[in-house]
Every structure is written in C-alpha cells, then in structure tokens.
Length: 294
Length: 320
Image 1 (tube, helix red, strand yellow):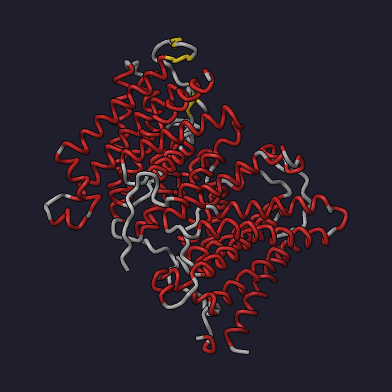
Image 2 (spheres, chains in turn cyan, purple):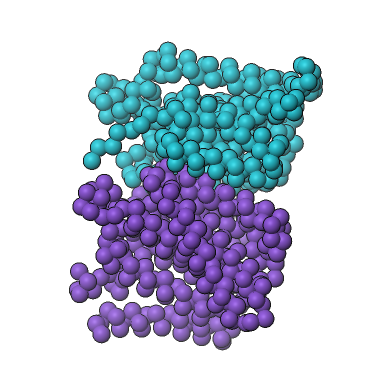
C-alpha cells in the first residue's frame, strides 16, 4: 500500500507539470480553435531559458522561473503575431499545418550549435534534494516545490480568468468571437494575451520539468506536449478545470502503468484511455456539448 | 480511345522509360535510385491519406501507423518464406493488404464516429499505440526486433515494381473518386449531416474510404520494407504521420495531381537541400524546411495545387 501511495505522489508531480502545459493548449483551443502543436516546444524553450538563467547568470530559482516565463510569453506572442494571425480567416487545417511548421522550426532551430545545441544537458538543481519521510511514504522537496509552484500559478490563472476584466474578455471571446467584437473587445489583443499567458505557464512547466526530471534536449517537448494536449482533451478541451483534472489523471495513469504494468508500454495505455474516453464521452470529462447547427 | 487516354499512357510509359534508361546507363547511382523509389513510395502513402482526408474529409493523424503495420506484416511473412523468392513477396504483399484492411476496419468503425479534431486526436493516439507496440513487439515475436529494429529483410523492391504500384494507386484512386462510392465520400466531406439526410450511408462510406486509404499506406509500407531491408519503429512514428499530412495539405486537399507533385517535391527538397547546402550549414536543412512550410501556408492557405488537376486525372466526358 505504501508503494501505491508513493506512486500516487510521483503521479501528482508529473500531473501538475502536465497541467501547466495543458492549460495553454486548452485556453488557445477555447479561443481560436487551433491545436497549437508548437506549445510543447515553447515548454522546451522554457526549460532551456531556466537552464541558462540558473547556470550562466546564477539567478536564484524564483527569478529563473520568472525569466523563463517572461521569455516564453514573448515567444508565444511573437509566434501568434507572425504565424497564426495572418491565417485567422483561413481554413483551420492551414493554421494547424503552420503550427506544425512552427513546432518543427523551434525544434530544429534550437538544436543548432549556436542556439541550444543538439545534446542532452544535465539540469542543475538550485538546492540539494532532501527527502522527508511521512509514515511509509517519502516526499522530496522537489516534489513539494513542483506541486506548490504549480498550484500557485493555477490559482493566479484562475484569478485572472475569473476576476479581472481581461479574463472576462477572454471568456467572452471564447464564447462568441463576433459578439465579443461587437461589444467593443479588442479580439486580437485578447488572443495575444491568451497566447502569452499560456506560454508563460508552459515556460514555468519547462523549468519545473527540468528540475524534476533533470535532463533536457531540444526534442523534449514533443511527448509531454502531446500528452498534455491529450490531457486537455480528456478533461474537455476549452475548460480550465477540465485541463487540470485531465492532466492529473494522465500523470497518475502514466506513473501507475510504469509501476504496475510495464514502463515501456505506458504511452500505449495513456492513449488507449484517451480513445476509450473519446468514444464514450466525445467532449471529454468536463466538456460542454456543442450543439450542431445544420 | 480518347486523346487524353493516349496522352496519359504515353506519359506513364515515358517517365518509366526515362528513369529505367537512366538507371541502366548508370546516370543514377544506387543512392539516387533509392531516393526516387522512396519518393514514389511516399506518394502512394500520401495518395491514401488524400483519399481519407482530402476526399472523405476524415482528419487522420495516424496514417504512418498503417504504413508501419503493412511494412512489418510483409517483412515478417517474406522473412519466414525467404526461400520462395518473389512468391514470398506476393504472399507478404497480400497478407499485408489483408492485415492492414482488417485493422483499419476494426479501428475505423468505432473512431470514425468522432469528428474533425477529435478524430485527429483519436487517430494520433492510435498511431502512438502502434508505435509503442512495435517497440515492444520483440517480447512476443522476437524476429520483429522491437526497438532494436528488424534486420535482414529480403530486398524485393526494384524500380519497375514501385512504379507499377504508383500507377496502380493513381488509377485506383482516380476511378474510386469518380465512382458513385467516391461521390458519396465527397458528399460526406462537404457536409456529413446533409449527406445523411439525402440517404448516404455515412458510416459505410467513411469506413470504405478509410480502409482503402489505409491499404495504400500498407502497400507503401511493404515496398518500403523491401527497399531498405531494415525497419525501425521510429520510421513510423507520429512525425511521419505529420509528414504525410503536410504533403497532402501542401498539395491541396482533394487533388491527386497536387499530392503527387507535393510528395515527390517534398522528398527531393529534403534530399536536394542535403546536396546543395555546404556541410557547415547542413544542420540548417531542417530549419529551412519548416520555414518554407510556414511561408507557403501564410501565402497560400489552401495548398499549392488546390482545385488543380492534370487533364488525364479529370473525369472524361463520359463520366461527368
């Protein structure tokens, strides 16, 4: 039983990192109906920015995470402005292909020698790891940090979306873009803000991921990106609580599969669950059913 | 015989004769010979995806999975029957077609109920499941090699065979699209609810399009396996499905000619950059390619060849 709880905690750690990425996916999808495949790579850039902040500039950890978030916000807004905005009225598949293009560009550009380089890098830990024994379960300070930072960021996000004027505008745009425009909301600005916030969360996720699983490389974003996206779909895409729920489920399922079944088969299980959920409840666990008009 | 038919026959044989002559006179070294065949193989697979997405409108992000299943199935059969020569290849091909069709049917029937992005995600999931299973296949069947890769597959794919299947793929898909089944598929792409209202059995035609398109991916996989005689699960992962999607969208959805040009152009662009670029900036090859992709999409969001079709692929007067 202790083993089970131990795995549960490991799963939560992974789940919260996925949640930070999944929120960006779900917010962007909610507003522009675009699967932003480049989001996983923004997560990767965040991890690298954190890495350089910690090793080159010797920033303390909180500043490093803010540095990564700021860099990713800038990157996300730039990508939106130059790659996605010209395609706002094009067929959705064109925007999707562009997103794939941006994703490939970020991956291969990052692996150039003068950018981040193609090699695996060991992530520095800003403090030594200590492990606390609670009953039969061990919790490391890294796990507390990952979960703690994620929870704080998620609360800030919840506050922005629910209580501020910008958040209200974001909800309005995701509900109905044209009506929002008629109400005097600057839709382009709100979309930029959404990309910025989503990218900032992904950047923070990248730093936390680097600290928790201390190895980074330019292609590290693909799998966590896909899984976070799956988590967003699992919870109901467009829904912020859904993305968190889906991400935590994905994290726990993945850890439990590695622990009890087979670690090489864990991706197969994660995606099998996705297909089953989609077949039973196509809009995800907390998703709203869209009414289809003919 | 109409004029168009004669022209298309001439074109088909002409291209074949030119490449055959170039091979036999040694203008093409084995490397380029392989690249040309690979271009045709990718075209066959992309034509299959064009049928699924371009004509039937079913968004699939897992096409490479069927490509991989065909390759592995056929490689397994030919490797077991190696002593039979080309008979083994025929057996491998047939078994791969049956196997891929069966899997596509079993997976397509439930997931084709999903729509647009959700279908894309489900097929993406299927693709990743297949890749993970191939990675772990050696636990069950050691000869498949799992993540170490499958070695020593007999080489059967030569240029005439690849070209034959390339022509077969074009003819079959062209005739399918202009048949009544194909028309039903197109009506589903245009509006599946309206199609259902006028009595089109959408499930049946979606599944038909999906299975046929997947079978072409499977055939392409068979040719691939016996061309390179080495298979690895990473040759059939998510990124390969994305490559095929890129080709189909760049070529213009629902355009056979566009798909052919995009597939061949895509292969030669990637290989050509390898030759043109000086070695010190060879790393830039895969940076230039996505940049081109973004630029093309921003300038021509509908793809390069959308709505365009070679004359010989268009319906003749009798078919209209």
